[in-house]
Amino acid sequence: MHRSAAELDHPASFWNRAAAHSDQGDPFCCRTEWQLSLQETYFPRRRLVFRRNATSLLALAERRYPDLGPILEPLDSLWMFGSPLLGPDALELLGALLAERRRSAEPATALVSGLMPGSALREALLERFLPDFEIFRVKTTQVCSASLEGGLDGFLARRSRPFRKRLRQAARHADANGLRFERFVPRTAAESDAAFARMLAVELTSWKGLAGRGIEEPTSSAFYAAMARRLAVSGSGRVIFARVAERDVGFIFGGLAGAVYRGQQFSYAEDHATWSIGNLLQQEQIRWLAEDGVVQYDLGPWMAYKEHWTERSIAMEALLLRPRSAARRAV
Image (tube, rainbow, N blue to C red; front, side, top):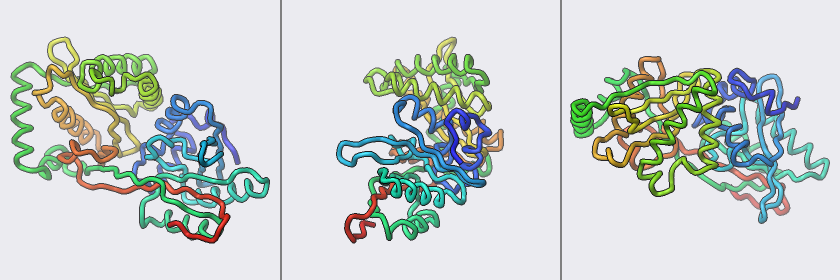
């Protein structure tokens, strides 16, 4: 059974229900808020290919590469955080699609992302497709997360003593100088756009924005704005602004996938860089999430600055399946 993107583009869609019943390293990025926002802003000309059964969904896009020719790829072929295989029977859908394309002499090379090494899904994919496909590992991404067990106090208890001390000192300094936090859950497109405009204004004053490396870049800006609007439909976005007097000097933004929060962006004004506003925003976000019963904070790809906040790292692979032309095994 096929579905169009428009039919699936809402928070309670079959797509998102299937994603919720999938064992994924980055569950938020399997959802429509992430996937369809990427499609419409970065790759609007790709043709989408969906397959569905009673329990599962397969979501792919067709794209032609100069060195590979036409392939089926995840909608998130940029970062490859999500997976096109959603639900317990998605592998069967992929097998049926590739068999159908081979019978009709259509290109049947496919890229599958979001596979965790050693997982049952990855092993089943290898067992199912190795007889007829060469399989190549094309990318491995490390994503990181932290438990929110015990609320903010429990989270901080699992951090180092020097880090906690620096955070307390930063909080005292910020409080003495009038820093306050404003929490916001956009619930309409207009509220979302207004919040995003404030985020962009902060970004332009940050080191990233001043260097031309922030989300002010037009395609990046369009992507995050589109995702924020989709999150507003279900009230699943979370934004905190750091303010001094009447000025926004920082923000942190992310979205919920059930009881899992996925951070997206945070930034702060360069003229307040010594205030540790980034760390204070992280702390305030964790406080809020814990109050709302969120159990896990996904921080996205591992980076050195996240070391103090993360507790575990998960590898996710992207594998290329190419119909066999010679008997060799690549994985």
